[in-house]
Amino acid sequence: MLKHHLIHPDINRVLGAAGHHGKILIADGNFPASSKMGPNAKLIHMNLCPGVLDCNQVLQTLLTAIPIEAANTMMYEKTGPYALTEEPPVWHSYRKTIKAAGLSLPLEPIEKWAFYDAVATPDHVLTIQTGEQQRYANLLLTIGVRMDF
Image (cartoon, rainbow, N blue to C red; front, side, top):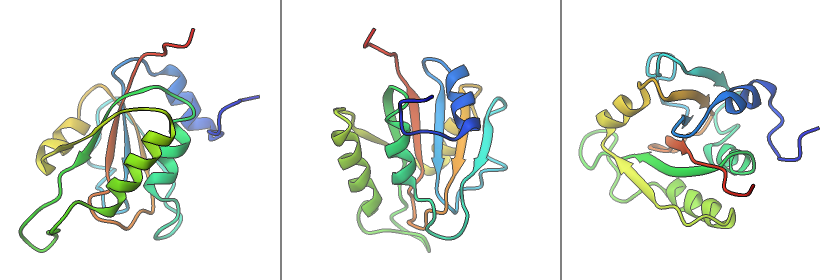
């Protein structure tokens, strides 16, 4: 029986086989998950309907199961049809969740097209597609090293 909050068997299987530097993408509902992924990545659809399951809920659960050493967001556009005038509200939620997990990990934005490139690497092991509707809610996590042995 698992002691952490993550009970999804396929996600546990991928995480159990992944190692240090593996990348996990928590994708919002707009991310092109089927065409932007690494050659070794598994895609898990958790998007039942708009808003269900959201990215922060997935982050909260993953943080109970694996160590994280880096968290990258997709930088929001400042001009054009999808532009924002300030960072997405979901980033504040991520910071609160990371802090509540006892981590002092900054969110590090990556320019949109560079973010797509970062996802398409051999280290990308998992994409969890959510029903998140906030723009620029994509979060790329890098698996760290377990230090509590």
